[in-house]
Length: 246
Image (cartoon, rainbow, N blue to C red; front, side, top):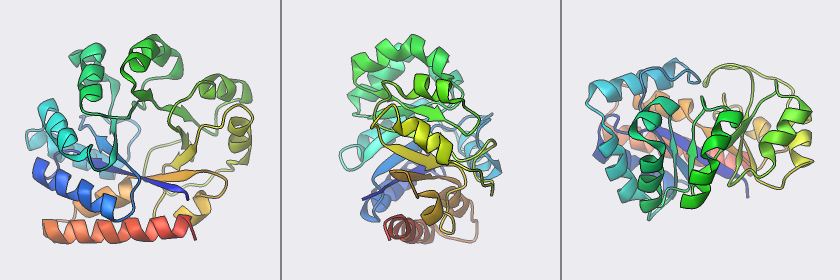
């Protein structure tokens, strides 16, 4: 069974909605949830997720909101934190990892922390039992992929193309998949540009998909009530889960 990982923006439109949506996604077949930590300059994300980040920040998002939401959902669904290094660094990585471990966060995804810099924090992650998710991309050499994936924990995040999330691009990924498989049995999930139309094709040869912009785009629809947003996102999640396992 291939896994579906969903990204949602924490605190948008508010904390209670985020909790309700997370629990609904679990019921819809989502296996793991990325709680996105709003940041003003999400360099790896496209305009959809960037807009949700900015609205959450304007709505008063604080790190304590992330902690409260996490406490409410980790008993029900496998949860990761996805955010940029700056907020974590300023809070203190030791403190952040302690807070994550206390709330049973299984992993952290930090797209602007290169593998080489992440190695400096690996002991802290290991000590708290929190996985630092590694990234591989079509631009990586076989030698670099071998270095990145050796010892990778939980899953490896394969970037589908060079660029930002939500874009409609396609690149040949077979060489990347083969290079990863040569060195590890850690599950390989693909992200960037995964939606209802592309999920089945993108899931070929990998163990799961990561979907963000397709869900967040619904969050931004001002003509929908919160109840309608949750219903539409849940329906989309079910459709994608069926597609990747069909």
